[in-house]
Image 1 (cartoon, helix red, strand yellow):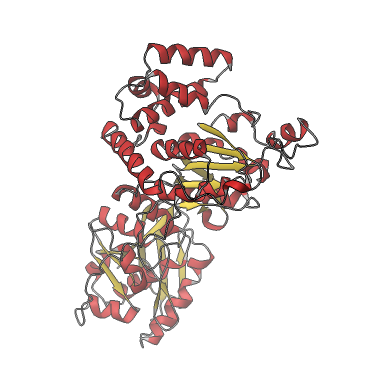
Image 2 (cartoon, helix red, strand yellow; image 1 turned 120 degrees about the vertical axis):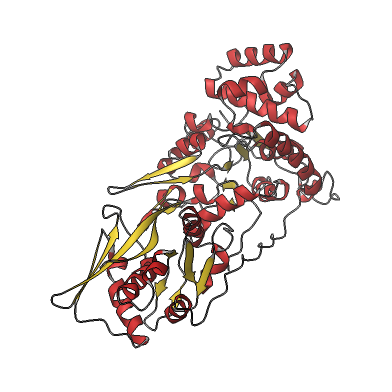
Length: 504
C-alpha cells in the first residue's frame, strides 16, 4: 500500500502542490527517490535515514521508493526532507496515514532529527490554505507562516516532536504570527538645503508611483534626496505587505517571521550582474527588481551599470513582472517597482556647472548619457536637473517642509487612487492606468489639451511619452485635490518631460 504526504515546489512566488508517495516492496534493500529531484532532494535519503536512526527507528530490509508527483515538475531544495520522512513514517504505520495526508510539510532534517528552517514558509502556508490542509514546518519558520490566518500552522522543533503530535502523545500549539518589524528611523526631507524642484518631483513620483531620474553634478544631493524618499511613501497595504513578504520569504530575507509595513528600498551597486538585478542564478532566485516590488529600486550612477543590465529593465518597467526563462522551467516574479535613477551629466560630472566647465562640451555629456538608450529614457516619467548647492547655503538653518508634512499629501493622493481603482487588480496607482481608463481619468481641459498637443508636436513625443505626461498630470491634480486635470497640471507635468540639459 502507498502512503502519502504533501509538500510544495516553488515556481517563482507560486507554490505548486507536490504529492510525496512512499511504497515498501519486496526486493534488495534500497532507498530510491524519483520524480525529477535535484541533488539536494536526492541527498534527503541519507538525512532521513540518519534522523530516523536518531529516533531508534530502523528502516526495513525492503525496497523503499519515494515518488514526487507530478514527476515532470522539477523539485529543488532541502525542504523535501520532512515530507519524505512523514510519508515513510506513515508507510511504517508509525503515524496514521490519514494524518500524514492532511498536512503540507516542509523542512530540512539534521542528522539528529532537528528541523532546520527553510525559505518559502509564507507561500507554502498560502498553498496549504488553498488545499485546506494544515502546515507542518520547523519551529523557526512558524511565526512567518502563521501570517496566513486561513490555515493552522504546526511548528515542530524536531521530527520526534512532530511524531508525538500526530500520535496524540504531546500536542503542539498552533504558531502565532511574528511581530510587525519596526520601521527603521527615516531621514527627513527638511535636511536637504534648496533643491525645491527636485523635492517636488519626488513628491509627485511617490504619489503616483512614477519613474524618476535625477541628473546633476557630483555632490549636488541626488543620493541624499533619494534616501529620503522612503520617508514620504505611504505604508504598504495588507495585501501589498503579503505580496512583498512572499518574495522576501523566497529570498530568505524575513527576520524571525516578522513582516514589515515599510515599502522596500533597494539600492544595488552599479557592478551588480544581470542575475542580481533581474533574477536567476541557482534555483532562479528573485532579483532586485522583484525584491523592490511595491517599493523603490534606486540605481545610483545609472549610466555605469552594464548596458545589457539597463536594457533588461525595459520590459519589467512596462509589465510589472519579470519572466526568468530556463531550459527546464519558466519562473515569473512580480516587480511593480518605482525606478529612481541618479546620474552625473557627463563622465567628469561638471557639464552643467558654470563654475567648473567641462573641457569636452558637448561630446562628454553625449557619450556618457548615451549609455542610456532612448527607449529606456522614454520610460522615465520625470526628469529633473539637480543643480549644485553653494557651500554658503549649507550653513543656513533647515527650511522647507518635513517629510511628515509631504507624506500627508502623498497619502491623500494615494487614497484617491485606491478609491478610483477599487475592484481592479491590475491597477493600483496612476502609473498603472492605461487605455480607456486613462482616457476617462486624465483627459485635460481644453487649454491643457491644446498645450499638450503643441508640446507633443514640438518635441515629437512618442505615444508612450504622451501617455506618461497624462498620468503625471493626473497625479499632480490628485495632489492638488482637483477632480479634473487642468492646464496648470499639464504644464507642470510637461516641465518634467521636455528636454533639459540632461540631453534627452
